[in-house]
Length: 208
Image (cartoon, rainbow, N blue to C red):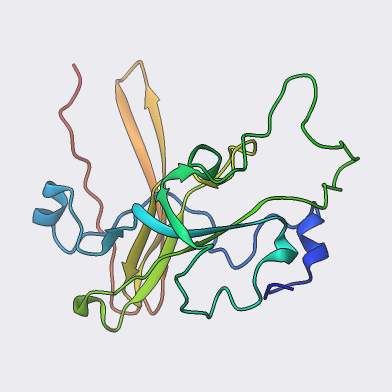
């Protein structure tokens, strides 16, 4: 049985929507300075897109017991593109969709077929020396193409300081009579915020 942080049966629990995931927030990207912001390139974000090592198991419980800790890179491990779907990269597992008949014995939710293809992904990551003392977070966006298995969107490794902007929301209002508008900004700071302040600036040309 594969090493999972919960009983395998819990994967079929419709109330389980996430595991080990940070709280959802706005899609913020940190920059060390305004000059870096202008370039759009942050030293605190690394793209992990490219070739990963991949292995396909027939079902979650069929994953090798040491697949997380083992350093072996031999078959059945193989290269696969990320982002991408494994159903279109020669793994032998084809897309599972039809608008009139599913390619497996339909059962009442949350039951699923025992044979349920499970992808195991592996890549090696080295943090830059400039990230020492900071927290690293793996960012995997919503994977909602249920009829295709795989990592469908870009994967990133992001670095955050112990004290950082955790979330940001902006509510606006506009009076067409006076043509005046207001903006209410709510900032959430994670970590020890003593002695820190948040400053906002609205950029962009005014619309006549």
